[in-house]
Image (cartoon, rainbow, N blue to C red; front, side, top):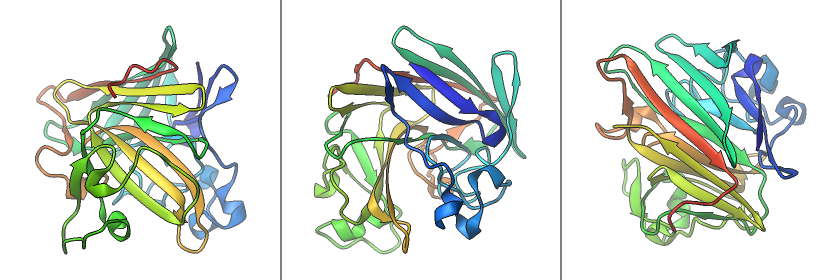
Length: 279
C-alpha cells in the first residue's frame, strides 16, 4: 500500500493505493465548479477559512465541525524533518511519521500542548466507493446520530439534543453500514471503538486507531447528494478518530481527548488491505 501526502497544503493525504486500486476520492479544484466557499481554491486557503472539500484524507484537529471549520491543521503548511511531518498551530503542535507495514501503512502521531488541553482528531478520509460498498464494525457498537439525521428517523428529534444514540448497524432504525445510491440525504454518525473495515467488491480497507487512555471512535459521513444545499455532490467518509463527537463544543467530559501532565498525547493510525475488524 502506498500513501502520498501534500505537506504544503495541510499535510493532506492525496493518494492511498493498493494493487492498482485508489481508495481516496478527490476533486482537483472545488473552486472551479463553484462548490468551494467564496470561490477559494483548496491550494489558496489560510488559517480560519471555511473548509474546502477537495477529498483525500485531511488531518482534522482540534475539532471537525464548529470553529475552526474542520480544525486548524488542514489549512496550514506542514514541514518535514527526516521522517517527521510537523504542523504548528496556535495552541498545539502535531507531528506524524508514516511507515510501511506488511500489508498497509501506519502513521504515528504526537500532539503536544498544555496539560489539560482537550481536542478531537479525525483522519477525515473520503473514499472512492461503489454504491454497494459496506462498512463493517462490531455489531451493536454504540453509535451517535446528529441532528441532520432527524428527517430520516421515525421519531421527532428532541429540541436542544446534540445527538441520539443507538446500536450499529442501524441506530434508531437508520441503516448505516451500506452507502447505496444517491438519494438526496447527508448524515454523519460516530461509532464507538476504533476499528472498522470497508468492503468494496473484492477489495478491503481496514482502518484502526489506537491510543492509550483516550476515547476511540470511527466517524461516518454518508453524503448521497444531500450536501451542500444548492450544489450537492456525493462524498463518503470513513474516519478513525479520537473523541466521540464532531464538534468539540459539544463534547462532554469523556467525549474528547485530553493532554495529560506530560504535555503529550500519542496515537497510531493503521490502514491495511487485510480485514481484521470484529463483525
